[in-house]
Length: 417
Image 1 (cartoon, rainbow, N blue to C red):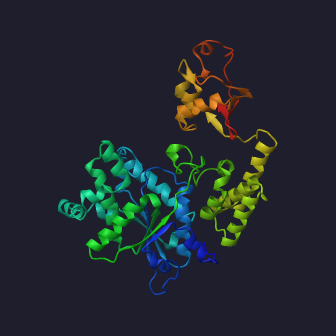
Image 2 (tube, helix red, strand yellow):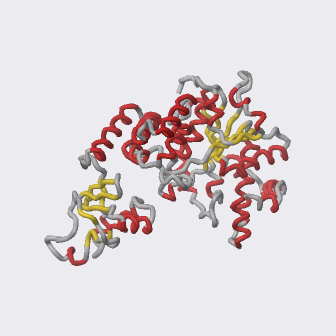
C-alpha cells in the first residue's frame, strides 16, 4: 500500500472521460495544502464485488497513494430503492437486513485495495434518513421529468411502454444529493453511471457548491468477452473467490481482452502495455502464457504471490496433464433433497448457483460438456436420485458419494450425499 506511483500517466490512462476535461491535472498534481475529497459510492445490492469493481478500486488506490482523501460511500439507503441503470424493468427492493449484511462484506473487500486508516467510510442513510418531506419535495423540484427521461434506460422504457415507477426517478436525485451532503470535489464511477454523476454536479450548483469533477472508468467485459461483467449473467470473477477459481476463469477469457484486463486491473506501465500489444499482434507471445501472467498478477494483488504460483501449478496439473486433483471442491447434496423421490442434477446446480440458467445447462449437455465419473451425461433431466433407485438397496445407475462431476472444461466437483 505504501509503494509509490512511478508513472503518473498510468492514473490518467484508466479514465474513459473526465468532466470538465480541463481539470484532469487536478487529479494527478495534488495541492499538498488541499487534497481532494474523492467519492466512490457502491450500493450493497449483492454480497460480492468483482473485477469490474476492481477497475475503480485500482484508480482509487492510485489516487490515495498520491495523497488525496478517499471517501467510500456505502449506499445503504439507495440500495433499498435500487438503481434501474441498464434494467428494462423495476428492480426489486432489498430488505434492511440484506443491505446490512452486504455492506459488511463490502468494507472487507475494498480494504484489499484501500488503506483502511486513510479511508473515510460513510453511509448515505446518515443524511437521507433525515430529509423531511418538504426537503425531499424541494430536492425533486430541482430537476425536470423531461431531463430525467433523457437517461437512456428511462427513455427506452418510456418509448416501449414499460412501466417506470416514481421512486425510480428519486434514485439519481438521492445519489446526486450524496455529493451535496459530502461536499465532494471528485466522484468516480463507471461509464454506465455518467447520468447519476452529472446529477451530483447539477445539484451541487443548485445548492450553491462548486460542482464536482467527474471521472469515469471503462466497463469491464466479463469472461464471455461480450457483456458487462455481472454476477447475474454468470460472467463475473469475484475478488473474494478462491485463487484457483480466479486463475481458471482468467485463463478462459477471450484473447482479445488480455491487454484490456492487463491495463485496467494491474499496475502495468505504458511501455509494458505497448510491448504486450505488439507481441499479441505479431503472435510472438502465446496467449495462454499472457493469460497466466495476468492471472498471477491479479491473484498476487488480491492474495499473495505464493497463492498465485500455487494456483498456476494446480491449473497446469489439471488441464495440461489432464489429471483431476485431489482437492476438488465438494458439492454436497442438501439433506432436504435426499428425502425426495427424485432429485435432478440441474435442480441441485441451480440451487447452488453453479450454472447461470437452465438454458446454459442445456447448451452444455448438447455440447457433451458434462461428465460423471468420466461418462458423458446426455440427458438434461439426469437424476442423481430416482424413485426407482431409492427403492433399491444397490442404488444401481445412480452416482455414489465421492463421484466426480465435470462441468465444461474447468469445473470439477466431488459429489457428497
